Length: 181
Image 1 (cartoon, rainbow, N blue to C red):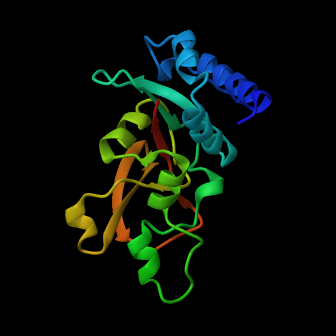
Image 2 (tube, rainbow, N blue to C red):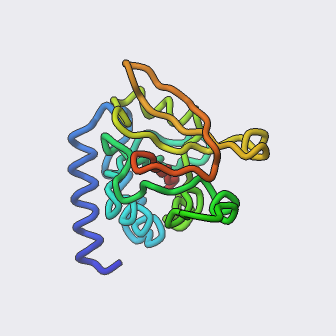
């Protein structure tokens, strides 16, 4: 990432950070910025999250590792990451009408991971997300081994967890990324 793009991304991230203080209590922007400057992999991940409509923001800090947790905070699942099945196994299993890719692989290619159910619920404590869309979440192996995958959304003021075949895909279902920096 060149200096101009890096500075532009840092400006966008700082503005979002300052506009949403409830997402990251007890976190100072100067400490976050110091961690980001010169960290090309982190900036690439955040740049991809931003480019695909995720509106990444700091949502906390891992007490054990000290890493800052960035998550997509766009009101709806990012438009640039929809219509994907769950993982490579599901994509390979489809014989017809294959989607462009899978959520797990796309998240990993960006340098992040899908949220767990617990992380998704914690995100929903910070705002109302996915009121018209839904997001794939990390699926436990015992569910995935049976061919299923989990996704979540917010409806009627509540967070719901659902299941679907891992090979399914819809124009309103995408994924959110969690990045540890």
